[in-house]
Image (cartoon, rainbow, N blue to C red; front, side, top):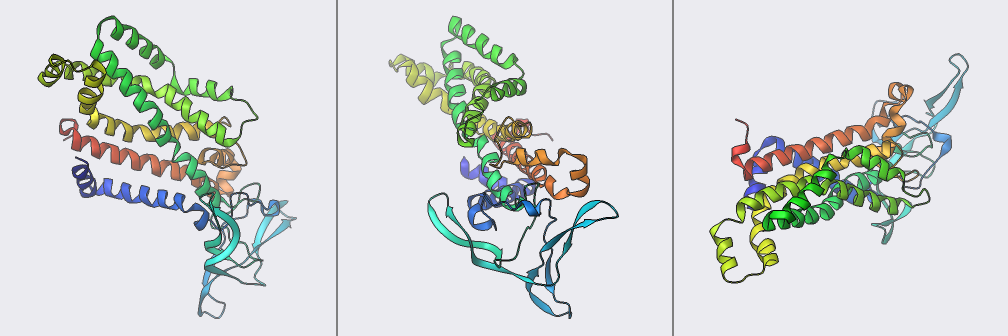
Length: 355
């Protein structure tokens, strides 16, 4: 089944494009320490809101040259009363590939100094400009993406086993047990999820580290999302439990939990795969929304949500459009997951395909 799904994904041009995009994103996030020109702790407040570095390959004589850039000079314009950044053309700074730069630990374990792209010691290479604290936006996008793009998977690993087992038990036993369990699930579903998420996130202790806050957000997302999934699984179990092979298992004395876990729940695999794929975008958006509101990952640690928060001011949108890059990546990632999820659903459930 997995082979067939992958083949169909690759045949569909939109799903294939989405797979390539997500593959490149996750590869870049995995190699973030190596790809990023600067470490996640880099900051130079004298370089606040510096525009993206301009890379040149043609020198002033019109000849082809190794890629180089110029630093920006911060100057005050007495006419507009604004701070401006102009290129300092007095010195070239050549761009180096696979060269040594700031030290870091690859995946937090292996000490390294080599970066994919960097410049000399006196040069500054800001591929996507800087933020208000003089931090490289490109480097922070890579480090922040690790949080925004993994939180959905971690939440799924918590909520799907809960929802699967809860719905399986409710549907199999039926009667009063089913009624009580479903009324509780429906009570959870009736609570507006995002508002509940905001309330739970707002009461988190302020002194928590970003790692602790990240794990608690994962748990909160899981506690909110399991009920709807469990309700659908319960409906599927109600139809599966009357099949002949289930009755045969009951007749030979197979335990009820074994029947649920070994014979019934595996039949819901196709639905689980589709539901997991289509659920990831909502968790990416939830984390980004919380961080945007200041209730998620806190500065100085990066996530796409708290990076996007800085772009909410009109002047930043107008004069510093590079700050909107996290929003673009959120849009692309969510769209890619939805395209893949729709294709998987069409493969596993052809009747759902819109003709």
